[in-house]
Length: 135
Image (cartoon, rainbow, N blue to C red; front, side, top):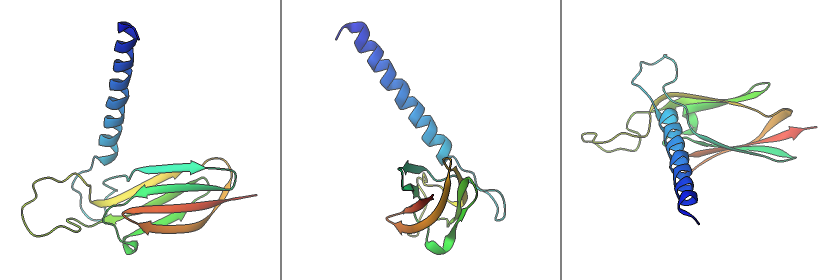
Protein backbone atom coordinates (compact mmCIF):
# COMPACT_ATOMS: atom_id res chain seq x y z
CA UNK A 1 0.00 0.00 0.00
CA UNK A 2 1.39 3.42 -0.93
CA UNK A 3 1.85 6.20 1.61
CA UNK A 4 -1.15 8.22 0.32
CA UNK A 5 -3.43 5.15 0.47
CA UNK A 6 -2.24 4.41 4.01
CA UNK A 7 -2.87 8.02 5.03
CA UNK A 8 -6.37 7.99 3.49
CA UNK A 9 -7.23 4.70 5.21
CA UNK A 10 -6.02 6.07 8.54
CA UNK A 11 -7.98 9.32 8.08
CA UNK A 12 -11.13 7.39 7.19
CA UNK A 13 -10.75 5.12 10.23
CA UNK A 14 -10.23 8.17 12.46
CA UNK A 15 -13.27 9.92 10.97
CA UNK A 16 -15.48 6.85 11.51
CA UNK A 17 -14.26 6.51 15.09
CA UNK A 18 -14.93 10.21 15.72
CA UNK A 19 -18.49 9.95 14.33
CA UNK A 20 -19.19 6.83 16.40
CA UNK A 21 -17.90 8.57 19.52
CA UNK A 22 -20.04 11.65 18.82
CA UNK A 23 -23.10 9.44 18.29
CA UNK A 24 -22.49 7.60 21.59
CA UNK A 25 -22.10 10.88 23.44
CA UNK A 26 -25.29 12.27 21.89
CA UNK A 27 -27.29 9.18 22.86
CA UNK A 28 -25.83 9.05 26.36
CA UNK A 29 -26.16 12.75 27.07
CA UNK A 30 -28.49 13.35 29.95
CA UNK A 31 -29.26 16.03 32.50
CA UNK A 32 -30.67 16.02 35.99
CA UNK A 33 -34.40 16.52 35.80
CA UNK A 34 -37.44 16.55 37.99
CA UNK A 35 -40.03 13.76 37.99
CA UNK A 36 -42.70 14.33 35.37
CA UNK A 37 -40.39 16.21 33.03
CA UNK A 38 -39.53 15.06 29.54
CA UNK A 39 -37.19 12.07 29.17
CA UNK A 40 -33.55 12.60 30.11
CA UNK A 41 -31.98 9.99 27.84
CA UNK A 42 -32.53 7.57 24.97
CA UNK A 43 -31.28 3.98 25.24
CA UNK A 44 -29.21 2.68 22.31
CA UNK A 45 -30.87 0.15 19.98
CA UNK A 46 -29.75 -2.58 17.57
CA UNK A 47 -32.33 -3.66 15.00
CA UNK A 48 -32.53 -6.39 12.37
CA UNK A 49 -35.23 -7.44 9.93
CA UNK A 50 -35.90 -10.43 7.72
CA UNK A 51 -38.92 -11.64 5.74
CA UNK A 52 -40.63 -13.04 8.89
CA UNK A 53 -39.77 -10.72 11.77
CA UNK A 54 -38.18 -7.59 13.13
CA UNK A 55 -35.85 -7.82 16.13
CA UNK A 56 -34.73 -5.07 18.47
CA UNK A 57 -32.15 -5.15 21.25
CA UNK A 58 -32.43 -2.15 23.58
CA UNK A 59 -29.81 -1.44 26.28
CA UNK A 60 -31.57 -0.86 29.62
CA UNK A 61 -28.91 -1.38 32.31
CA UNK A 62 -30.33 -1.56 35.82
CA UNK A 63 -33.96 -1.21 34.67
CA UNK A 64 -36.42 -3.74 36.07
CA UNK A 65 -39.49 -4.95 34.15
CA UNK A 66 -41.77 -2.92 36.43
CA UNK A 67 -39.98 0.32 35.44
CA UNK A 68 -40.64 0.41 31.69
CA UNK A 69 -43.37 -0.04 29.10
CA UNK A 70 -43.43 -0.95 25.42
CA UNK A 71 -46.07 0.56 23.13
CA UNK A 72 -46.53 -0.55 19.52
CA UNK A 73 -47.85 2.29 17.37
CA UNK A 74 -48.76 2.28 13.68
CA UNK A 75 -45.24 2.85 12.29
CA UNK A 76 -43.15 2.99 15.48
CA UNK A 77 -42.44 1.20 18.70
CA UNK A 78 -41.90 3.21 21.88
CA UNK A 79 -39.97 2.07 24.95
CA UNK A 80 -40.23 4.39 27.95
CA UNK A 81 -39.58 4.17 31.65
CA UNK A 82 -37.17 5.15 34.36
CA UNK A 83 -33.81 4.01 35.66
CA UNK A 84 -33.45 4.75 39.36
CA UNK A 85 -30.47 6.75 40.56
CA UNK A 86 -27.67 4.58 41.89
CA UNK A 87 -29.20 1.32 40.74
CA UNK A 88 -26.98 -1.52 42.01
CA UNK A 89 -24.50 0.86 43.65
CA UNK A 90 -23.39 0.73 47.24
CA UNK A 91 -23.13 3.63 49.66
CA UNK A 92 -20.38 6.18 49.10
CA UNK A 93 -19.32 9.16 47.03
CA UNK A 94 -19.89 8.99 43.29
CA UNK A 95 -16.56 9.24 41.44
CA UNK A 96 -17.86 8.62 37.94
CA UNK A 97 -21.35 8.37 36.46
CA UNK A 98 -21.51 7.46 32.79
CA UNK A 99 -24.64 5.29 32.70
CA UNK A 100 -27.62 7.65 32.52
CA UNK A 101 -30.51 7.50 34.94
CA UNK A 102 -33.92 9.10 35.22
CA UNK A 103 -36.76 9.05 32.72
CA UNK A 104 -36.01 7.62 29.28
CA UNK A 105 -37.89 7.20 26.04
CA UNK A 106 -36.89 5.75 22.70
CA UNK A 107 -39.20 5.97 19.70
CA UNK A 108 -38.03 3.64 16.93
CA UNK A 109 -39.50 4.08 13.49
CA UNK A 110 -40.46 0.73 11.98
CA UNK A 111 -39.86 -0.30 8.37
CA UNK A 112 -42.84 -0.32 6.03
CA UNK A 113 -45.38 -3.03 6.82
CA UNK A 114 -47.52 -4.26 9.69
CA UNK A 115 -46.04 -5.87 12.78
CA UNK A 116 -47.26 -7.57 15.95
CA UNK A 117 -45.21 -7.82 19.15
CA UNK A 118 -44.67 -11.55 19.69
CA UNK A 119 -41.90 -11.78 22.30
CA UNK A 120 -40.29 -9.59 24.94
CA UNK A 121 -37.33 -10.68 27.09
CA UNK A 122 -35.30 -8.59 29.55
CA UNK A 123 -31.95 -10.28 30.12
CA UNK A 124 -28.46 -9.09 31.08
CA UNK A 125 -29.51 -5.43 30.98
CA UNK A 126 -30.94 -5.65 27.46
CA UNK A 127 -34.54 -5.79 26.31
CA UNK A 128 -35.05 -8.08 23.32
CA UNK A 129 -38.22 -7.47 21.32
CA UNK A 130 -39.45 -9.66 18.48
CA UNK A 131 -42.16 -8.36 16.16
CA UNK A 132 -43.77 -10.72 13.67
CA UNK A 133 -44.43 -9.34 10.21
CA UNK A 134 -48.14 -9.58 9.40
CA UNK A 135 -49.08 -10.63 5.87
